[in-house]
Length: 131
Image 1: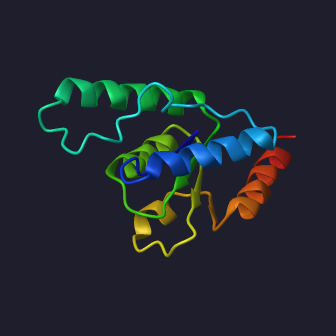
Image 2 (image 1 turned 60 degrees about the horizontal axis):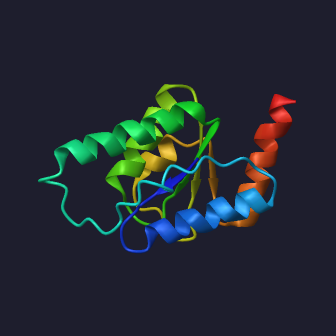
């Protein structure tokens, strides 16, 4: 599963990495195909919908083997998804072309990559260890 900040063009980054991975032969869970909430600027009066989104995403993390997090900019949701994934024994890959100014995603990651090429190498390493 690929996660990251949703707002401000974040969805398109997630979709781009999902497509890239599919083209390379990976099965990718698509948690945003029917839950694109990128246009919502304020969830304060949408508690039920917020809970629905969280439950939806956490269930998909449970189904995933690896959580790939685009960490180009901070995201409350992505941070919690990383923490949740690690606590249930999932592998976490942090991907950022930019500097990562917080120690938190780095501390909870199994691999840190800068681009798609490094991402493929990291996923191959995980696959080789399982074989």
